[in-house]
Amino acid sequence: MNIEGLDYNTQREKLALPEYGREIQRMVDHAKTLADKKERQRCAETIIAIMDRMFPQNRQNADYKHKLWDHLALMSNFELDIDWPYDIDQAATITTRPEPMAYPMKDIAVKHYGYMVFELFDKLKQMEPGKERDELTRVTANQMKRNLMLWSHGSSDDEKVASDLARFTDGKIQLDLSTFKFEKVSVRDVEVRSKKKKR
Image (cartoon, rainbow, N blue to C red; front, side):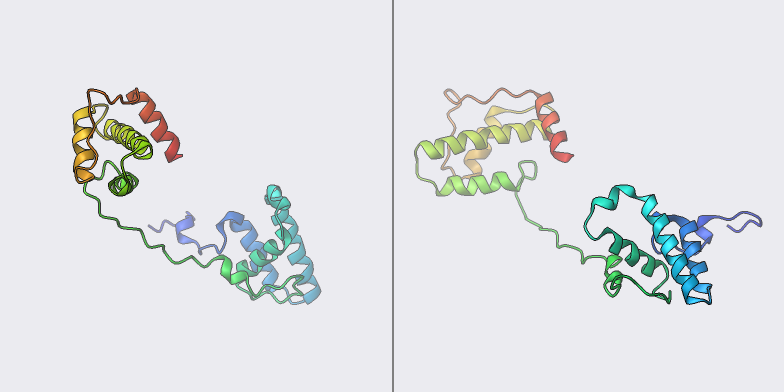
């Protein structure tokens, strides 16, 4: 949309570093037009002083001043002919984006238990009977129940947990529900814990 008299940001030239705003960019553009090198130098130093005042909380960071000069070089598209107090050769790397990371696609039979619980199933399958396996069984069963409560909107079935535990450990782990006691966990506890993890 192009309405005479209205100036929208979407119609303006894209800013190299938007965090400094359009006014700083205009100052940088003006500095590039100055014919006298001493005047350009003085103008650049003034711009750096203004940029410094914009983000005082960053002053504690190492090489803070160097970063400001790198930013100035970027905003001037490396066309500002001044005596740079720092080496600005690496400034262009600031705006380069990292390569996207490969997302680990792991195929699991039942997504609501999560990949880590399936790792526990594999470990339980390989363990010899004893106290250590009994403890890991207890931890795994309780985690399965929590996950079921979370993904089933509060409902969980002890028999379902026992059945799934036997199924995914190839029958090696059989919970005796007459003696096994699950930890008491309310739906609210599970939801609160889940929200804390997401933060």
